[in-house]
Length: 155
Image 1 (cartoon, one colour):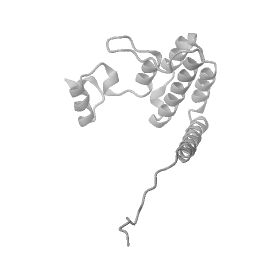
Image 2 (cartoon, rainbow, N blue to C red):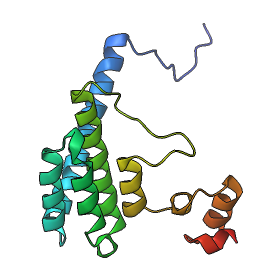
Image 3 (cartoon, helix red, strand yellow):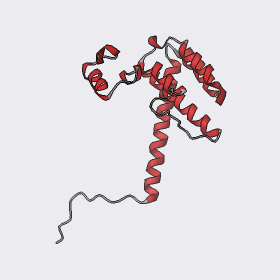
């Protein structure tokens, strides 16, 4: 008798891996769509719908319009979860628009360079200690440990 383990894991074939990846991708996209539908149906659905309309028309020269909309909307009255859904939609739209124009999907600035549109939007929608200003790693760790999201956490 051979000593075979009771639970043998078998390696997935290349086709099985692709099928599994496709299934997970479809499930993720369906979940994202559900999240967006909930945001559109919620108390701030008009703001989300207006933003989605703007994102549907996003072009390379739309940065000012997007930033203007983001800066002049009352995000503090909108739940953090909805803001994250909105941030995901903005990221997806910017990425698709850049690829449509033959640009790399992401173009984050190097340290010391001005923030790009997405990073500015993220700092408004989902602020964190690291985005308030360029904090050192120890300042970020202190802010996270103390639960403070202001510059005073590092002073």
